[in-house]
Length: 209
View 1 (cartoon, one colour):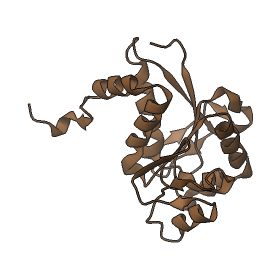
View 2 (cartoon, one colour):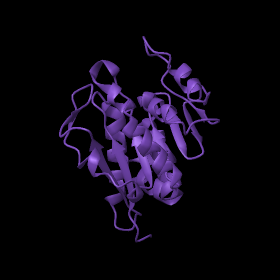
View 3 (cartoon, one colour):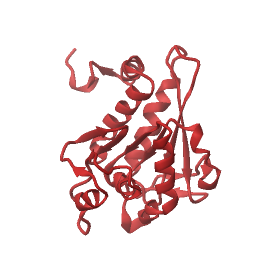
View 4 (cartoon, one colour):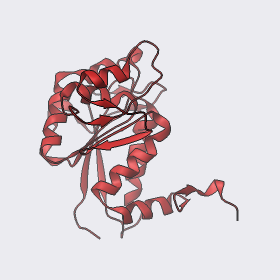
């Protein structure tokens, strides 16, 4: 067991996708369930005192964006969201700078759904593979990846040079466990899966007695 707690920064834009945010908080929260498990701490941040998810989740962030010290964090997580509910603020140049700084210091950038698009705009995806949500009605998400210099991949979860992307909320847990594996190690993933009632990677509800 390591004595070091891994610090993860979770940025929440208005209109964030509720499940994606909750998955990160819950999966890494389970590292605190047993003393022998290596620990991770997720710090939420936002531009506002209160930030609201598309489907009703409301969060008072741990810190405001102006209080962030990028050097404290081993990873930045950006869930996707709904542009009709304020998600455009995720494309703020301050997010682009934060992405570049954390990645430049060896950190991971983990995204879900359209959360990869501000990462593409930041320039760090140039020459790398990434995936994104394919079903937006009014936006060419894959085209935005390509405009940022990335190769658009249709895989459900893609990792390239410490940048993780996925196709939507259905794979948010895979992103969380992949990030956990890279930051803390496979034993912690096995421990957390076990205590969350997974067996050999499959939910217990789908297994016979």
